[in-house]
Amino acid sequence: MTAPTNLAATLRRLPLFNDLSDEELTIIAERVTLRRYDSDAIIFSEGDTCVELLIVKEGSVKVLKTAANGRRQLIAIERAGNSLAEISVFDGGAYPATAITVGPVVLLRLEAEHFRRICLRHPEVALKVIKVLGHRLRRMGSLVEDLSFSTVRGRLVACLVHMATEDGRQTANGIEFQLTENNEELAARLGTVRELVSRNLGRNIQAFLGVQNLADKVYFVQTNPSTIGTPRLVNGGLRVRWAAR
Image (tube, rainbow, N blue to C red):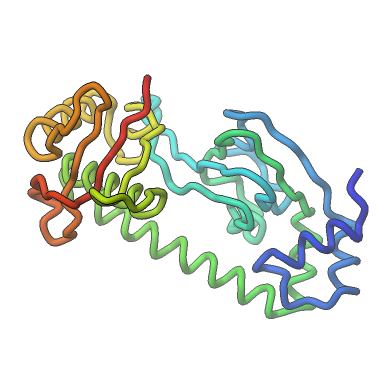
């Protein structure tokens, strides 16, 4: 079991709690527990009752909505320091989505009622939660806009550009990154089905990603956001290295 002093030090590094005193953090840490999950484990499912605040200590968690026909939409990927489904902690409702681990994950767990009392005693914590919820609302607005007004091809290219910007490394030829998601996972991210992702990947590769080396599966993609709707090959653009399947 992790000592409260160690948990207090962990809480100190989290944005929600970094304004609290050491004494306050120690008191909170006494009510915090740790739970470890293996890769691809379900943390909670849409519709489950929420009884605690969950914060990612280590690893990453993907949050998904699932339709009645089984089709999935990726809502977010939460990394270390981020909390999960905070709205359910406050309104007492069920979880609005499903959370699944991406690799091994360690979560901090704090009873929902206890966290609500913390917010009443420390308004600065509540304000930080409001800021997090505001960020999520803006992100949901952007997602609705993309799904409503962008084509699958446009969303796919924008997704590749975002991934390269976030996780790529600079090389002499541009930014290089490795795509580790399969077509089904990409479909969940883009709000479509696997078949359309496969079809559009083929079109993108042939039409405008520009195969540089078929054996290594290395491609280039346009980086100018204003032309994402109609991408074209640009030397010195983003080099995308596809992971082996």
